[in-house]
Length: 194
Image 1 (cartoon, one colour):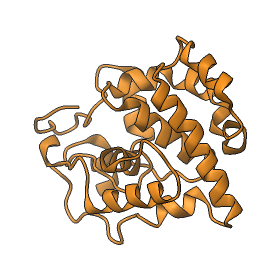
Image 2 (cartoon, rainbow, N blue to C red):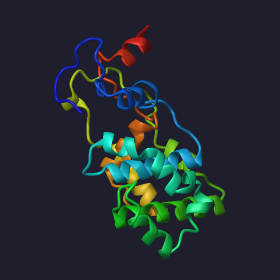
Image 3 (tube, helix red, strand yellow):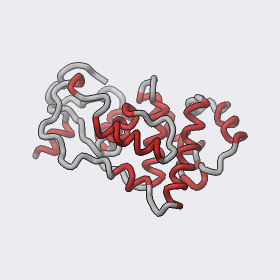
């Protein structure tokens, strides 16, 4: 993403790539609910760590296929052999620790369900009570983590989730619409202001 002021009418990110622009315009900052949907966002944000988001976005269909649509009950039953199979799958990012984390996180979702809770409830309990009063003018003004993402990461870890530090938690909050960090001159922000 950019470290400069967004020109009025220019996207925060995604200009110049149709897939990236579509993600920016229709998904980023839009509220996401549902167990597979939230598990997917957590997983993809974890896979993105250290990489370009566009790389992950281009592999998203392959991730969905490899991880059974991120259905927690299915992924929770993945075995060591499934992890080894995925480590060999060139259509996804073949990071063993991140692949294992998806399986671990699916099992944590199942454990939440056994306690009568949902991932949706857990994640959304960390949404800020009030939206930010002003949009950031610069990317440097968008935080990498916040006290809310620290609390979300701590809560997720306490429930057995892996690969969910405060930065990944904040990126998930952005991706799932708990926070809306579209810059002040972005077309999405301008549409919302009307």
